[in-house]
Structure formats: C-alpha cells, structure tokens
Image 1 (tube, rainbow, N blue to C red):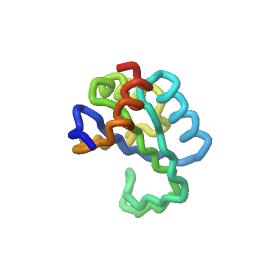
Image 2: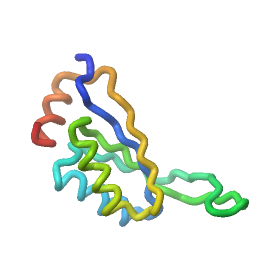
Image 3: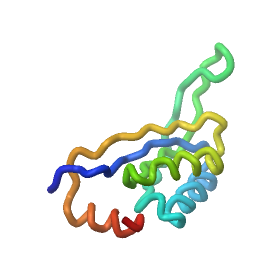
Image 4: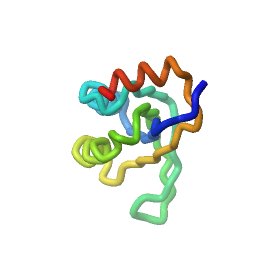
Length: 110
C-alpha cells in the first residue's frame, strides 16, 4: 500500500436509480472517474426550502478519481446532476493499494 498522491473519493446522492446510473455512466465514459459505486436503499433526512423535514430515498454514489479531474467533474455536476444543489463532498485518499492506483490512473487517462 502506498501513500495517496492526489486520488480522491467523491460522494453524491441522486433520488432515482435510473438517473444515478446515467450520471455514473457519464463520469466513467468521459474518463472523469475510474469507478462509480452505486449504493441503493439510502434515505436522506433534511430541510429543503421549508421548515418541514423531508425523508427521501436516494442512491449514494462513490466516485473514485484523481484531483486533477476535479474541475472537469465540477462542470459535469453543474451540467448533468439532476439536483439544483447537488451534494459534492471530496475526500482525499490517504493510502491506496498500488495495483488499484495503477488501474485507476490508467482508466482516467493519467
């Protein structure tokens, strides 16, 4: 295992499986991400434009990529994410397996 060198994990949520699949496929097709893991069955509880609390089902997306792709990913979110205010949380990868890092970098064209 090696120390991370710019690899990141991005978290976002989308409300419908078909929208999540399309969004994830776009990231991989454009080589903005090496892999996007979809975790269905989540529920998010929040206030949105009111004082009422909302509790909605969502699909969590875990996006594996490199920091050098972040500005392109931000543009993709602005253009393709179905939410007007999408969750875009970025986590730095502290350590990563050598083989996985090599595969990730190859898949995103770095």
